[in-house]
Length: 116
Image (cartoon, rainbow, N blue to C red; front, side, top):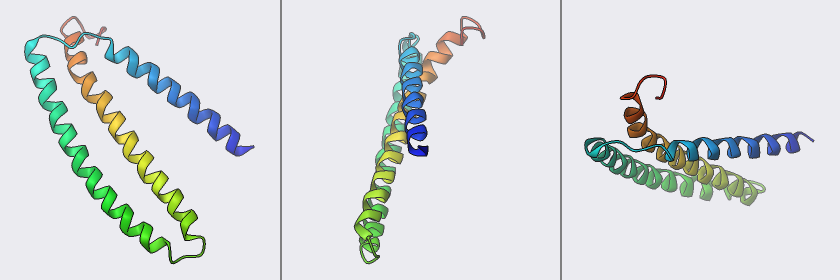
């Protein structure tokens, strides 16, 4: 029963996140200078996430190998690697939306605080 509640809450949370992201991305990105700054931020965030992905992957592989010596180690590996992957995916998606929101928020702020 608890699993069902957690699953439903997770699905509702994902749906709300997708709606918020869709609303954000539909806003205008701004003028040429804002777009230039936004692209530089996007490039930096991609480089950061790429590096972070390498570190997480190396760490996860080492731990996965160590977990194999435990009783039911393969089950622990599946749970751990699933968690590592979904954690990285969440970071990637969150960073992607946040970076896209930066220039759009700045653009809307030029029209007034209420719109931003």
